[in-house]
Image (cartoon, rainbow, N blue to C red):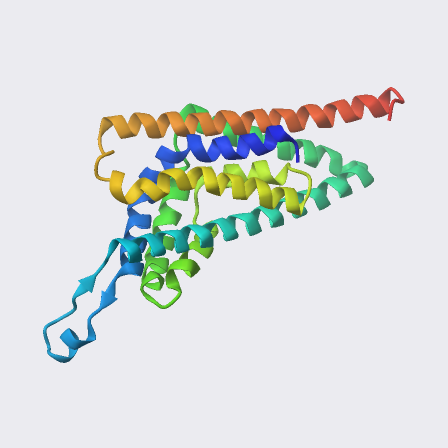
Amino acid sequence: MSITLAATALLMGLAGGPHCVAMCGAACAGITRAGSARIDTSQLRGGGGVQLVAGDVRTSSAMWSFQFGRLASYAAAGAVAAAAVQSFAWLATQTAALRPVWTLFHLAVLAWALMLVVQARQPMWVSAAGRNVWRRVRPLATTRGGVFATGALWSLMPCGLLYSALLVASLSGGPLQGALAMALFAIGSSVSLVLAPRLFDKLKGVGNKLRQDAGTRVAGLLLALAAAWGLWMDLADRIAIWCGLA
């Protein structure tokens, strides 16, 4: 994997931080609180209801458990995406009929990136799907090992920024490189999500909206550069073949 793609994945995570906080900050804070909560069974036996005790240590442990699960699932998704695209790229080089499809794939990535740059938001259907998935996943966080499992399932959450990072990972050249790219994206975006429980209430309003829009546009721009690089490399390879240089 080139340093350019690695840096792109990391910067997408860092720049998309405000977007992640706006989209997932409340959910991550809720998961952390649910995972760190302990039910006082003596209160239950006495009919006094449920007492939730959430210490700083337990909260921190739950938060890191979620983030490690999220990093592992993102890396796995990146490996799968890179392996799939690498296989398709090999088929495209062996079958002339598939070469235009490979080019169209890069153009589709570029179109998605430009949409993020222009609209500064993910498609509405992605947001709606994300809310539906979250309603199903939320109860899992209260079970034993549920916080890590919830993080491990986070790569299945519909998210335009996540899809953009997966597209970058798919261009990295192989499963290991794809896993590394998504791990870097997860680390970059974790910076904001780790702070989300403390900053979520403070970052509401117009200022947060501006930061979210700027972060989404920067992430879209980085994805557009990666797609343009892929198109250029494909074109350069064809020119080299045409000129007998390869």
